[in-house]
Length: 303
Length: 303
Image 1 (cartoon, rainbow over the protein chains, first blue to last red):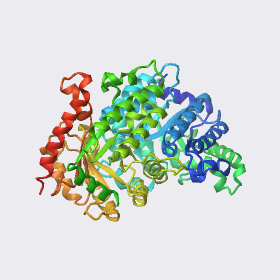
Image 2: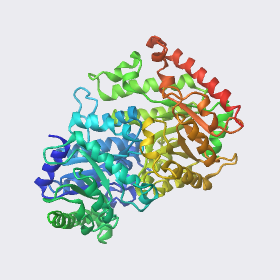
Image 3: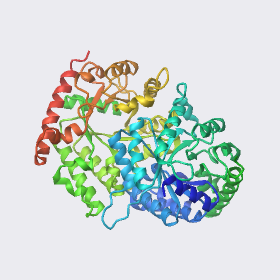
Image 4: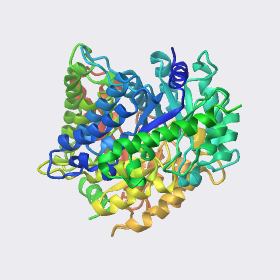
Protein backbone atom coordinates (compact mmCIF):
# COMPACT_ATOMS: atom_id res chain seq x y z
CA UNK A 1 0.00 0.00 0.00
CA UNK A 2 1.47 3.39 -0.89
CA UNK A 3 1.81 6.26 1.58
CA UNK A 4 -1.42 7.96 0.55
CA UNK A 5 -3.40 4.81 1.27
CA UNK A 6 -1.56 4.01 4.47
CA UNK A 7 -2.38 7.51 5.68
CA UNK A 8 -6.02 7.12 4.63
CA UNK A 9 -6.27 3.89 6.61
CA UNK A 10 -4.59 5.37 9.67
CA UNK A 11 -7.03 8.32 9.70
CA UNK A 12 -9.98 5.94 9.37
CA UNK A 13 -8.70 3.68 12.10
CA UNK A 14 -8.05 6.37 14.69
CA UNK A 15 -11.08 8.38 13.58
CA UNK A 16 -9.17 11.65 13.50
CA UNK A 17 -6.60 13.62 11.53
CA UNK A 18 -4.39 14.89 14.33
CA UNK A 19 -0.64 14.99 13.78
CA UNK A 20 1.26 15.11 17.06
CA UNK A 21 4.41 17.18 16.73
CA UNK A 22 7.46 16.03 18.69
CA UNK A 23 9.46 19.24 19.26
CA UNK A 24 11.62 18.69 22.34
CA UNK A 25 12.61 22.33 22.95
CA UNK A 26 15.31 22.12 25.60
CA UNK A 27 14.01 25.13 27.50
CA UNK A 28 10.44 23.83 27.71
CA UNK A 29 11.05 20.26 28.86
CA UNK A 30 9.42 19.47 32.22
CA UNK A 31 11.83 19.49 35.15
CA UNK A 32 11.84 15.67 35.35
CA UNK A 33 13.80 15.79 32.08
CA UNK A 34 15.98 18.70 33.23
CA UNK A 35 19.09 16.52 32.77
CA UNK A 36 18.79 17.51 29.09
CA UNK A 37 19.66 21.07 30.12
CA UNK A 38 22.48 20.25 32.54
CA UNK A 39 25.86 21.26 31.08
CA UNK A 40 27.69 19.23 33.71
CA UNK A 41 26.43 16.00 32.15
CA UNK A 42 27.87 14.18 29.12
CA UNK A 43 26.14 14.94 25.84
CA UNK A 44 24.84 11.40 25.39
CA UNK A 45 23.13 11.55 28.76
CA UNK A 46 21.55 14.92 28.04
CA UNK A 47 20.31 13.67 24.68
CA UNK A 48 18.88 10.54 26.32
CA UNK A 49 16.87 12.64 28.79
CA UNK A 50 15.39 14.55 25.85
CA UNK A 51 14.64 11.22 24.14
CA UNK A 52 12.95 9.91 27.30
CA UNK A 53 10.53 12.82 27.15
CA UNK A 54 9.70 12.06 23.51
CA UNK A 55 9.11 8.39 24.27
CA UNK A 56 6.76 9.28 27.13
CA UNK A 57 4.91 11.67 24.82
CA UNK A 58 4.50 8.96 22.18
CA UNK A 59 3.24 6.52 24.81
CA UNK A 60 0.49 8.82 25.99
CA UNK A 61 -0.73 9.30 22.40
CA UNK A 62 -0.60 5.57 21.58
CA UNK A 63 -3.53 4.46 19.46
CA UNK A 64 -5.04 7.93 19.53
CA UNK A 65 -3.49 9.74 16.55
CA UNK A 66 -2.69 8.45 13.06
CA UNK A 67 0.73 10.06 12.83
CA UNK A 68 3.49 11.92 14.66
CA UNK A 69 5.93 14.54 13.41
CA UNK A 70 9.36 14.72 15.07
CA UNK A 71 11.32 17.89 14.24
CA UNK A 72 14.96 17.15 13.38
CA UNK A 73 16.35 20.49 14.60
CA UNK A 74 15.75 19.73 18.27
CA UNK A 75 17.55 16.42 17.98
CA UNK A 76 20.46 17.91 16.03
CA UNK A 77 21.15 20.23 18.97
CA UNK A 78 23.00 17.25 20.47
CA UNK A 79 24.81 16.26 17.26
CA UNK A 80 25.33 12.53 16.72
CA UNK A 81 23.93 11.75 20.18
CA UNK A 82 20.77 13.63 19.29
CA UNK A 83 20.57 11.78 15.97
CA UNK A 84 20.66 8.48 17.90
CA UNK A 85 17.66 9.72 19.90
CA UNK A 86 15.87 10.66 16.68
CA UNK A 87 16.26 7.07 15.54
CA UNK A 88 15.03 5.81 18.90
CA UNK A 89 11.93 8.01 18.65
CA UNK A 90 11.21 6.98 15.05
CA UNK A 91 11.60 3.30 15.97
CA UNK A 92 9.34 3.64 19.01
CA UNK A 93 6.60 5.42 17.04
CA UNK A 94 6.62 2.58 14.53
CA UNK A 95 6.33 0.02 17.35
CA UNK A 96 3.22 1.94 18.43
CA UNK A 97 1.95 1.77 14.82
CA UNK A 98 1.97 5.50 14.30
CA UNK A 99 3.01 6.91 10.92
CA UNK A 100 6.14 9.05 11.19
CA UNK A 101 6.37 12.32 9.26
CA UNK A 102 9.96 13.50 9.67
CA UNK A 103 9.94 17.30 9.75
CA UNK A 104 13.34 17.88 8.17
CA UNK A 105 12.59 20.42 5.39
CA UNK A 106 15.50 19.19 3.29
CA UNK A 107 16.06 20.54 -0.21
CA UNK A 108 19.14 20.34 -2.43
CA UNK A 109 20.40 19.60 -5.96
CA UNK A 110 19.44 16.24 -7.45
CA UNK A 111 22.41 14.08 -6.43
CA UNK A 112 22.28 15.46 -2.90
CA UNK A 113 18.50 15.18 -2.65
CA UNK A 114 18.91 11.51 -3.60
CA UNK A 115 21.21 11.05 -0.60
CA UNK A 116 18.67 12.68 1.73
CA UNK A 117 15.88 10.49 0.32
CA UNK A 118 18.02 7.43 0.85
CA UNK A 119 18.90 8.33 4.42
CA UNK A 120 15.37 9.27 5.46
CA UNK A 121 13.04 7.02 3.47
CA UNK A 122 15.00 4.17 1.93
CA UNK A 123 17.89 3.15 4.17
CA UNK A 124 21.17 1.45 3.47
CA UNK A 125 20.06 -2.07 4.41
CA UNK A 126 22.95 -3.01 6.65
CA UNK A 127 22.86 -6.70 7.52
CA UNK A 128 21.02 -7.45 10.73
CA UNK A 129 20.29 -3.81 11.51
CA UNK A 130 16.95 -2.05 11.29
CA UNK A 131 16.91 1.20 9.38
CA UNK A 132 14.95 3.80 11.31
CA UNK A 133 13.08 5.39 8.48
CA UNK A 134 10.24 7.85 8.22
CA UNK A 135 6.98 7.16 6.41
CA UNK A 136 7.12 10.65 4.95
CA UNK A 137 9.27 13.77 5.25
CA UNK A 138 8.82 17.48 4.67
CA UNK A 139 10.87 18.96 1.81
CA UNK A 140 11.72 22.43 0.52
CA UNK A 141 11.35 22.93 -3.26
CA UNK A 142 13.40 26.15 -3.52
CA UNK A 143 15.96 24.37 -5.72
CA UNK A 144 13.30 23.34 -8.22
CA UNK A 145 11.80 20.18 -9.61
CA UNK A 146 15.13 18.36 -9.73
CA UNK A 147 15.34 18.65 -5.94
CA UNK A 148 12.02 16.77 -5.66
CA UNK A 149 12.36 14.08 -8.35
CA UNK A 150 14.82 11.89 -6.38
CA UNK A 151 12.31 11.84 -3.51
CA UNK A 152 9.50 10.81 -5.87
CA UNK A 153 11.58 7.89 -7.10
CA UNK A 154 12.29 6.69 -3.58
CA UNK A 155 8.65 7.24 -2.52
CA UNK A 156 7.52 4.94 -5.30
CA UNK A 157 10.02 2.23 -4.36
CA UNK A 158 9.41 2.33 -0.64
CA UNK A 159 5.73 3.37 -0.35
CA UNK A 160 6.65 6.56 1.43
CA UNK A 161 5.60 10.17 0.92
CA UNK A 162 6.70 13.79 1.01
CA UNK A 163 5.10 17.04 2.06
CA UNK A 164 6.36 19.97 0.02
CA UNK A 165 6.42 23.38 1.72
CA UNK A 166 3.83 25.47 -0.14
CA UNK A 167 2.73 28.16 2.33
CA UNK A 168 4.14 27.92 5.81
CA UNK A 169 2.28 28.88 8.98
CA UNK A 170 4.67 31.52 10.32
CA UNK A 171 4.20 35.29 9.95
CA UNK A 172 7.46 35.45 7.95
CA UNK A 173 5.96 33.22 5.27
CA UNK A 174 4.70 36.38 3.55
CA UNK A 175 8.27 37.69 3.00
CA UNK A 176 9.03 35.52 -0.03
CA UNK A 177 6.22 33.00 -0.53
CA UNK A 178 3.80 35.62 -1.88
CA UNK A 179 6.33 36.88 -4.41
CA UNK A 180 5.05 37.12 -8.03
CA UNK A 181 1.70 36.58 -9.76
CA UNK A 182 0.87 33.71 -9.58
CA UNK A 183 2.65 33.73 -6.24
CA UNK A 184 5.57 31.48 -5.46
CA UNK A 185 3.28 29.42 -3.21
CA UNK A 186 0.75 29.02 -6.03
CA UNK A 187 3.46 27.96 -8.48
CA UNK A 188 4.74 25.37 -6.06
CA UNK A 189 1.16 24.19 -5.42
CA UNK A 190 0.66 23.59 -9.14
CA UNK A 191 3.91 21.64 -9.26
CA UNK A 192 2.88 19.56 -6.24
CA UNK A 193 -0.36 18.63 -7.96
CA UNK A 194 1.63 17.53 -11.02
CA UNK A 195 4.33 15.69 -9.05
CA UNK A 196 1.61 13.67 -7.36
CA UNK A 197 0.14 12.29 -10.58
CA UNK A 198 2.50 9.34 -10.67
CA UNK A 199 1.96 8.43 -7.04
CA UNK A 200 -1.82 8.16 -6.70
CA UNK A 201 -3.39 5.78 -4.19
CA UNK A 202 -6.70 3.94 -4.57
CA UNK A 203 -8.50 6.44 -2.36
CA UNK A 204 -8.04 9.46 -4.60
CA UNK A 205 -5.00 11.01 -2.91
CA UNK A 206 -1.39 11.05 -3.97
CA UNK A 207 1.67 10.44 -1.81
CA UNK A 208 2.93 13.94 -2.58
CA UNK A 209 1.54 16.22 0.10
CA UNK A 210 1.76 19.93 0.79
CA UNK A 211 2.40 22.01 3.88
CA UNK A 212 -0.13 24.85 4.07
CA UNK A 213 -0.35 26.89 7.27
CA UNK A 214 -3.65 26.70 9.16
CA UNK A 215 -2.94 30.32 10.07
CA UNK A 216 -4.06 31.50 6.59
CA UNK A 217 -7.66 30.20 6.32
CA UNK A 218 -8.54 32.07 3.11
CA UNK A 219 -5.39 30.87 1.37
CA UNK A 220 -6.04 27.36 2.65
CA UNK A 221 -9.41 27.09 0.90
CA UNK A 222 -7.83 28.20 -2.38
CA UNK A 223 -4.93 25.80 -1.95
CA UNK A 224 -7.33 22.91 -1.24
CA UNK A 225 -9.07 23.63 -4.56
CA UNK A 226 -5.79 24.05 -6.41
CA UNK A 227 -4.45 20.67 -5.22
CA UNK A 228 -7.56 18.46 -5.11
CA UNK A 229 -5.67 15.16 -4.71
CA UNK A 230 -2.96 16.37 -2.36
CA UNK A 231 -2.85 15.36 1.30
CA UNK A 232 -2.33 18.56 3.25
CA UNK A 233 -0.27 19.03 6.38
CA UNK A 234 -1.65 21.98 8.31
CA UNK A 235 0.68 23.47 10.93
CA UNK A 236 -0.24 26.42 13.10
CA UNK A 237 -3.14 24.99 15.10
CA UNK A 238 -2.91 25.71 18.81
CA UNK A 239 0.27 27.47 19.93
CA UNK A 240 0.57 29.40 16.65
CA UNK A 241 -2.98 30.70 16.91
CA UNK A 242 -5.17 28.88 14.38
CA UNK A 243 -8.46 27.46 15.65
CA UNK A 244 -10.56 24.52 14.54
CA UNK A 245 -12.72 26.60 12.15
CA UNK A 246 -9.60 27.87 10.41
CA UNK A 247 -8.71 24.40 9.18
CA UNK A 248 -12.19 23.34 8.03
CA UNK A 249 -11.59 24.14 4.37
CA UNK A 250 -8.57 21.81 4.30
CA UNK A 251 -10.77 18.73 4.60
CA UNK A 252 -12.86 16.69 2.21
CA UNK A 253 -15.98 14.73 3.05
CA UNK A 254 -15.36 11.94 5.55
CA UNK A 255 -12.62 13.82 7.39
CA UNK A 256 -9.92 12.96 4.88
CA UNK A 257 -7.51 15.17 2.96
CA UNK A 258 -5.49 16.78 5.73
CA UNK A 259 -3.49 16.24 8.88
CA UNK A 260 -3.59 19.00 11.49
CA UNK A 261 -0.42 19.44 13.49
CA UNK A 262 0.02 20.60 17.04
CA UNK A 263 3.39 20.40 18.76
CA UNK A 264 3.98 22.68 21.74
CA UNK A 265 0.22 23.01 22.27
CA UNK A 266 0.11 19.35 23.30
CA UNK A 267 3.56 18.46 24.62
CA UNK A 268 3.99 21.56 26.75
CA UNK A 269 0.31 22.11 27.59
CA UNK A 270 1.20 22.12 31.29
CA UNK A 271 2.80 25.54 30.88
CA UNK A 272 -0.24 27.22 29.32
CA UNK A 273 -2.57 25.44 31.73
CA UNK A 274 -0.50 26.66 34.69
CA UNK A 275 -0.17 23.13 36.02
CA UNK A 276 2.93 21.81 37.84
CA UNK A 277 5.40 20.02 35.62
CA UNK A 278 4.68 16.79 37.45
CA UNK A 279 1.31 16.88 35.68
CA UNK A 280 2.69 17.41 32.18
CA UNK A 281 1.31 14.05 31.01
CA UNK A 282 -2.20 14.80 32.26
CA UNK A 283 -2.08 18.30 30.74
CA UNK A 284 -0.89 16.88 27.41
CA UNK A 285 -3.60 14.23 27.46
CA UNK A 286 -6.26 16.85 28.19
CA UNK A 287 -4.99 19.06 25.36
CA UNK A 288 -4.92 16.09 22.99
CA UNK A 289 -8.50 15.20 23.95
CA UNK A 290 -9.64 18.74 23.16
CA UNK A 291 -7.79 18.73 19.84
CA UNK A 292 -9.16 15.35 18.76
CA UNK A 293 -12.68 16.52 19.52
CA UNK A 294 -12.29 19.94 17.87
CA UNK A 295 -10.60 18.66 14.71
CA UNK A 296 -12.99 15.72 14.53
CA UNK A 297 -16.10 17.88 14.66
CA UNK A 298 -14.76 20.15 11.92
CA UNK A 299 -13.29 17.44 9.71
CA UNK A 300 -16.38 15.28 9.69
CA UNK A 301 -18.69 18.11 8.69
CA UNK A 302 -16.59 18.91 5.59
CA UNK A 303 -18.50 18.66 2.35
CA UNK B 1 37.49 38.19 14.89
CA UNK B 2 34.12 37.71 13.22
CA UNK B 3 33.53 35.19 10.43
CA UNK B 4 33.97 37.73 7.62
CA UNK B 5 37.42 38.68 8.90
CA UNK B 6 38.46 35.11 9.64
CA UNK B 7 37.54 34.23 6.07
CA UNK B 8 39.43 37.26 4.74
CA UNK B 9 42.54 36.18 6.65
CA UNK B 10 42.26 32.56 5.48
CA UNK B 11 42.04 33.65 1.82
CA UNK B 12 45.06 35.92 2.27
CA UNK B 13 47.05 33.22 4.00
CA UNK B 14 46.44 30.46 1.45
CA UNK B 15 46.52 32.92 -1.45
CA UNK B 16 43.40 31.49 -3.05
CA UNK B 17 39.62 31.35 -2.70
CA UNK B 18 39.00 27.65 -3.32
CA UNK B 19 36.36 25.89 -1.26
CA UNK B 20 36.87 22.14 -1.26
CA UNK B 21 33.54 20.31 -1.16
CA UNK B 22 33.39 17.09 0.85
CA UNK B 23 30.60 15.10 -0.83
CA UNK B 24 31.22 11.42 -0.10
CA UNK B 25 28.81 9.94 -2.67
CA UNK B 26 28.69 6.25 -1.78
CA UNK B 27 28.73 5.16 -5.41
CA UNK B 28 31.77 7.24 -6.32
CA UNK B 29 34.12 6.35 -3.45
CA UNK B 30 37.36 4.71 -4.62
CA UNK B 31 37.41 0.94 -4.18
CA UNK B 32 39.76 1.21 -1.17
CA UNK B 33 36.76 2.67 0.68
CA UNK B 34 34.32 0.13 -0.79
CA UNK B 35 33.47 -1.07 2.70
CA UNK B 36 31.12 1.93 2.78
CA UNK B 37 29.03 0.20 0.10
CA UNK B 38 29.08 -3.31 1.60
CA UNK B 39 25.63 -4.23 2.98
CA UNK B 40 27.09 -7.18 4.86
CA UNK B 41 28.94 -4.83 7.21
CA UNK B 42 27.53 -3.06 10.27
CA UNK B 43 26.41 0.50 9.63
CA UNK B 44 29.04 2.02 11.91
CA UNK B 45 31.79 0.30 9.96
CA UNK B 46 30.40 1.44 6.62
CA UNK B 47 30.11 5.00 7.88
CA UNK B 48 33.69 4.87 9.19
CA UNK B 49 35.00 3.85 5.75
CA UNK B 50 33.22 6.85 4.25
CA UNK B 51 34.73 9.02 6.98
CA UNK B 52 38.21 7.64 6.27
CA UNK B 53 37.90 8.86 2.69
CA UNK B 54 36.91 12.35 3.87
CA UNK B 55 39.84 12.49 6.28
CA UNK B 56 42.27 11.48 3.53
CA UNK B 57 40.77 14.16 1.28
CA UNK B 58 41.22 16.81 3.96
CA UNK B 59 44.81 15.73 4.53
CA UNK B 60 45.77 16.14 0.88
CA UNK B 61 44.32 19.67 0.86
CA UNK B 62 46.00 20.67 4.14
CA UNK B 63 47.32 24.23 4.05
CA UNK B 64 46.24 24.67 0.45
CA UNK B 65 42.66 25.92 0.66
CA UNK B 66 41.08 28.40 3.07
CA UNK B 67 37.92 26.40 3.66
CA UNK B 68 36.11 23.11 3.14
CA UNK B 69 32.41 22.39 2.69
CA UNK B 70 31.09 19.03 3.90
CA UNK B 71 27.59 18.19 2.61
CA UNK B 72 25.34 16.82 5.37
CA UNK B 73 23.17 14.64 3.11
CA UNK B 74 25.93 12.15 2.37
CA UNK B 75 26.63 11.69 6.06
CA UNK B 76 22.95 11.37 6.97
CA UNK B 77 22.72 8.35 4.65
CA UNK B 78 24.13 6.40 7.61
CA UNK B 79 21.90 8.00 10.25
CA UNK B 80 23.49 8.56 13.65
CA UNK B 81 26.64 6.69 12.58
CA UNK B 82 27.00 9.07 9.65
CA UNK B 83 26.46 12.03 11.94
CA UNK B 84 29.36 10.81 14.09
CA UNK B 85 31.52 10.83 10.95
CA UNK B 86 30.35 14.36 10.16
CA UNK B 87 31.63 15.43 13.56
CA UNK B 88 34.90 13.59 12.97
CA UNK B 89 35.37 15.39 9.65
CA UNK B 90 34.50 18.80 11.10
CA UNK B 91 36.92 18.24 13.98
CA UNK B 92 39.71 17.11 11.65
CA UNK B 93 39.29 20.09 9.33
CA UNK B 94 39.62 22.41 12.32
CA UNK B 95 42.79 20.59 13.42
CA UNK B 96 44.14 21.36 9.94
CA UNK B 97 43.10 25.00 10.41
CA UNK B 98 40.63 25.01 7.56
CA UNK B 99 37.37 26.93 7.93
CA UNK B 100 34.33 24.65 7.81
CA UNK B 101 31.26 25.70 5.84
CA UNK B 102 28.58 23.14 6.69
CA UNK B 103 26.40 22.67 3.62
CA UNK B 104 23.14 21.86 5.38
CA UNK B 105 20.65 24.26 3.73
CA UNK B 106 18.47 24.36 6.85
CA UNK B 107 15.48 26.66 7.03
CA UNK B 108 12.54 26.68 9.44
CA UNK B 109 10.33 28.83 11.67
CA UNK B 110 12.10 30.96 14.26
CA UNK B 111 12.10 28.64 17.29
CA UNK B 112 13.24 25.72 15.14
CA UNK B 113 15.85 27.78 13.29
CA UNK B 114 17.24 28.71 16.71
CA UNK B 115 17.71 25.01 17.47
CA UNK B 116 19.53 24.47 14.16
CA UNK B 117 21.77 27.46 14.83
CA UNK B 118 22.55 26.14 18.28
CA UNK B 119 23.38 22.66 17.03
CA UNK B 120 25.53 23.78 14.11
CA UNK B 121 27.21 27.01 15.24
CA UNK B 122 26.88 27.41 18.99
CA UNK B 123 26.89 24.03 20.72
CA UNK B 124 25.52 22.84 24.01
CA UNK B 125 28.76 23.15 25.98
CA UNK B 126 28.74 19.76 27.66
CA UNK B 127 31.43 19.54 30.34
CA UNK B 128 34.71 18.13 29.07
CA UNK B 129 33.41 17.52 25.56
CA UNK B 130 34.30 19.45 22.45
CA UNK B 131 31.42 20.65 20.31
CA UNK B 132 32.10 19.95 16.66
CA UNK B 133 30.81 23.15 15.17
CA UNK B 134 30.97 24.75 11.76
CA UNK B 135 32.40 28.20 11.09
CA UNK B 136 29.49 28.90 8.77
CA UNK B 137 26.50 27.04 7.33
CA UNK B 138 24.29 27.37 4.27
CA UNK B 139 20.66 28.29 4.97
CA UNK B 140 17.40 28.45 3.01
CA UNK B 141 15.33 31.62 3.47
CA UNK B 142 12.05 30.27 2.04
CA UNK B 143 10.37 30.72 5.45
CA UNK B 144 11.28 34.40 5.55
CA UNK B 145 13.33 36.75 7.67
CA UNK B 146 12.29 35.09 10.92
CA UNK B 147 14.01 31.90 9.75
CA UNK B 148 17.29 33.82 9.42
CA UNK B 149 17.23 36.08 12.49
CA UNK B 150 18.05 33.30 15.00
CA UNK B 151 21.13 32.48 12.92
CA UNK B 152 22.21 36.14 12.91
CA UNK B 153 22.00 36.23 16.69
CA UNK B 154 24.15 33.12 17.04
CA UNK B 155 26.61 34.36 14.39
CA UNK B 156 27.17 37.51 16.41
CA UNK B 157 27.73 35.59 19.64
CA UNK B 158 30.03 32.94 18.20
CA UNK B 159 31.83 34.77 15.36
CA UNK B 160 30.33 32.45 12.78
CA UNK B 161 28.58 33.08 9.48
CA UNK B 162 25.82 31.95 7.14
CA UNK B 163 25.45 31.69 3.38
CA UNK B 164 21.87 32.26 2.29
CA UNK B 165 20.72 30.49 -0.89
CA UNK B 166 20.09 33.27 -3.41
CA UNK B 167 20.49 31.65 -6.84
CA UNK B 168 21.61 28.03 -6.87
CA UNK B 169 23.87 26.48 -9.51
CA UNK B 170 21.57 23.71 -10.74
CA UNK B 171 19.43 23.88 -13.90
CA UNK B 172 16.28 23.53 -11.73
CA UNK B 173 17.10 26.83 -10.01
CA UNK B 174 15.09 28.59 -12.72
CA UNK B 175 11.87 26.79 -11.73
CA UNK B 176 11.07 29.02 -8.75
CA UNK B 177 14.00 31.35 -8.08
CA UNK B 178 13.22 33.57 -11.09
CA UNK B 179 9.59 33.96 -10.03
CA UNK B 180 8.32 37.57 -9.90
CA UNK B 181 9.75 40.98 -10.74
CA UNK B 182 12.07 41.66 -8.95
CA UNK B 183 12.72 37.94 -8.96
CA UNK B 184 12.68 35.84 -5.83
CA UNK B 185 16.47 35.62 -6.03
CA UNK B 186 16.76 39.41 -6.26
CA UNK B 187 14.45 39.90 -3.30
CA UNK B 188 16.46 37.48 -1.21
CA UNK B 189 19.68 39.20 -2.33
CA UNK B 190 18.36 42.55 -1.09
CA UNK B 191 17.46 40.95 2.22
CA UNK B 192 20.93 39.35 2.51
CA UNK B 193 22.53 42.75 2.02
CA UNK B 194 20.35 44.15 4.80
CA UNK B 195 20.81 41.19 7.17
CA UNK B 196 24.56 41.65 6.86
CA UNK B 197 24.57 45.25 8.08
CA UNK B 198 24.82 44.26 11.72
CA UNK B 199 27.63 41.78 11.15
CA UNK B 200 30.27 43.78 9.28
CA UNK B 201 33.95 42.95 9.65
CA UNK B 202 36.84 45.38 9.49
CA UNK B 203 37.65 44.37 5.89
CA UNK B 204 34.40 45.57 4.33
CA UNK B 205 32.54 42.28 4.24
CA UNK B 206 29.74 41.00 6.43
CA UNK B 207 29.38 37.54 7.93
CA UNK B 208 26.14 37.02 6.01
CA UNK B 209 27.07 35.43 2.71
CA UNK B 210 25.10 34.35 -0.33
CA UNK B 211 25.14 31.27 -2.52
CA UNK B 212 25.11 32.28 -6.19
CA UNK B 213 25.73 29.62 -8.82
CA UNK B 214 28.87 30.07 -10.94
CA UNK B 215 26.80 28.53 -13.73
CA UNK B 216 24.94 31.83 -14.29
CA UNK B 217 27.75 34.32 -15.10
CA UNK B 218 25.47 37.19 -16.17
CA UNK B 219 23.34 36.86 -13.04
CA UNK B 220 26.49 36.61 -10.93
CA UNK B 221 27.77 40.03 -12.02
CA UNK B 222 24.41 41.61 -11.15
CA UNK B 223 24.30 39.83 -7.80
CA UNK B 224 27.84 41.00 -6.98
CA UNK B 225 26.71 44.59 -7.55
CA UNK B 226 23.48 44.10 -5.63
CA UNK B 227 25.28 42.73 -2.55
CA UNK B 228 28.54 44.72 -2.45
CA UNK B 229 29.55 43.66 1.09
CA UNK B 230 28.43 40.04 0.90
CA UNK B 231 30.90 37.15 0.73
CA UNK B 232 29.72 34.94 -2.09
CA UNK B 233 29.84 31.15 -2.24
CA UNK B 234 29.97 30.09 -5.89
CA UNK B 235 29.07 26.46 -6.55
CA UNK B 236 29.04 24.93 -10.02
CA UNK B 237 32.72 25.19 -10.96
CA UNK B 238 34.12 21.98 -12.42
CA UNK B 239 31.73 19.01 -12.46
CA UNK B 240 28.67 21.27 -12.94
CA UNK B 241 30.22 23.01 -15.94
CA UNK B 242 31.27 26.52 -14.93
CA UNK B 243 34.79 27.59 -15.91
CA UNK B 244 37.21 30.03 -14.35
CA UNK B 245 36.05 33.00 -16.48
CA UNK B 246 32.46 32.42 -15.36
CA UNK B 247 33.32 33.28 -11.80
CA UNK B 248 35.46 36.36 -12.47
CA UNK B 249 32.69 38.84 -11.77
CA UNK B 250 32.15 37.39 -8.28
CA UNK B 251 35.48 38.80 -7.07
CA UNK B 252 36.69 42.14 -5.88
CA UNK B 253 40.19 43.53 -6.19
CA UNK B 254 42.77 41.46 -4.34
CA UNK B 255 40.98 38.18 -4.90
CA UNK B 256 38.51 38.70 -2.08
CA UNK B 257 34.72 38.59 -2.06
CA UNK B 258 34.02 35.00 -3.04
CA UNK B 259 34.78 31.35 -2.42
CA UNK B 260 34.60 29.01 -5.41
CA UNK B 261 33.46 25.50 -4.63
CA UNK B 262 34.39 22.27 -6.32
CA UNK B 263 33.37 18.93 -4.84
CA UNK B 264 33.26 15.92 -7.17
CA UNK B 265 35.62 17.68 -9.58
CA UNK B 266 38.38 17.33 -7.00
CA UNK B 267 37.50 14.35 -4.82
CA UNK B 268 36.55 12.04 -7.68
CA UNK B 269 38.91 13.47 -10.30
CA UNK B 270 40.35 9.99 -10.84
CA UNK B 271 37.15 9.00 -12.63
CA UNK B 272 37.18 11.85 -15.13
CA UNK B 273 40.94 11.47 -15.64
CA UNK B 274 40.52 7.75 -16.32
CA UNK B 275 43.10 6.89 -13.68
CA UNK B 276 42.95 3.78 -11.49
CA UNK B 277 41.28 4.29 -8.14
CA UNK B 278 44.60 3.61 -6.43
CA UNK B 279 45.66 7.01 -7.81
CA UNK B 280 42.65 8.95 -6.53
CA UNK B 281 44.86 11.04 -4.26
CA UNK B 282 47.22 12.02 -7.06
CA UNK B 283 44.29 12.78 -9.37
CA UNK B 284 42.63 14.90 -6.70
CA UNK B 285 45.87 16.77 -6.01
CA UNK B 286 46.34 17.45 -9.73
CA UNK B 287 42.77 18.72 -10.04
CA UNK B 288 43.22 20.90 -6.97
CA UNK B 289 46.43 22.34 -8.43
CA UNK B 290 44.62 23.25 -11.63
CA UNK B 291 41.74 24.81 -9.72
CA UNK B 292 43.99 26.85 -7.45
CA UNK B 293 45.86 28.20 -10.47
CA UNK B 294 42.73 28.91 -12.53
CA UNK B 295 40.79 30.57 -9.74
CA UNK B 296 43.88 32.43 -8.60
CA UNK B 297 44.58 33.94 -12.00
CA UNK B 298 40.99 35.10 -12.34
CA UNK B 299 40.49 36.31 -8.79
CA UNK B 300 43.66 38.36 -8.70
CA UNK B 301 42.87 40.21 -11.92
CA UNK B 302 39.49 41.37 -10.58
CA UNK B 303 39.06 45.11 -10.48
